[in-house]
Length: 428
Ligand code: AMO
Image (cartoon, rainbow, N blue to C red; front, side, top):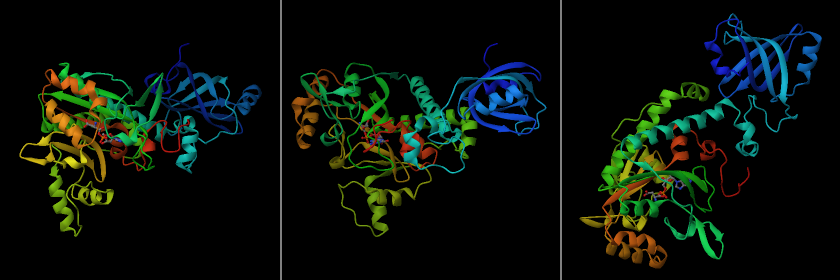
């Protein structure tokens, strides 16, 4: 008989013979009957067995979390909470779990995050933990769908590279035969080169590596970056692409992940677009109205951003950042070159996306390299792409784990990362 997913059992008639496979979450042995609680990727079901001697002996020997096969008959008149159970006819162990478990799967007391991450394969068996990743997947799917609908193609650019994009200090060096190489911080240079190649609109979902030393609740050393680049477009076009992509992601998650939101005990709404926009200079005015002295040209601290963010309900853009805090590829503002055509998308004090219109004039680009004291030679392949017909272009990079974290109201980015890489962790 073929396997039935637990989540599909409801669709069968009372009395149907079924075979299910799953993890034995719990066995409750009573005087005359035993209840096995089985779990698979789609749900949980109770299987009831009469305690004849052989069955009772078999059940007693099965450790929690073992993989078992249960054969039985669907009982839709069950008095169990879900109203459906299986009247078991046979149970066998497919693969035994050792005891004791490194971490309990059903335990009202939540272990601390470090302990959970050390045994992540068990931690991920918990319904309220796996829910996060199902929602993350749907968010990404909705974003992908939106971008495809806008004629973007998905691309894959190298992660072993020869040059830094987001600043030289945060690079992980790798040995590449006889050459020095690094893990890529962002697909920035390649996505721009693809604009020169005439691809018009590209997006990439891939890992980005940052050797940042600080260990915070919103930084990872390897994260998933959703990047876009679009030709004949400016920062305003990129911002509206971003808010619509996020909206599509959230709509998809709301549509597809009802049970997961329930498991997390939360519900989220579709964010209203357009998101409010506030300029960097306006933020300074806001801070000074609160008595905070802030120097033009500096970056905001989390405390500053908390104060600015308290003025907004959800997402908001901070636009027109000064050139001093933006990378070399950022387009200066035409009537005020101290500023740039750039933006960050914020949610309270947390930055979720950075983006900008880019410099497309090769001479201006080389000047910007010099101003930032970067070695033009190591960027030659990038600069060459600007010399032979580069369209004006814009784009952004959105951190998937941060997006999931803020939408689900979680307070540590490790919660939205399957196997986080931080300052001290590379295992598992
Ligand atoms: P930026 O460096 O601001 O911009 O990164 C873009 C977005 O990526 C996420 N992010 C991170 N997430 C977790 N841990 C980190 N250490 C981390 N660093 C960044 C954030 C951030 O907003 N090339 C530009 C993008 C562009 O202009 O297209 C870039 O990489 O959500």
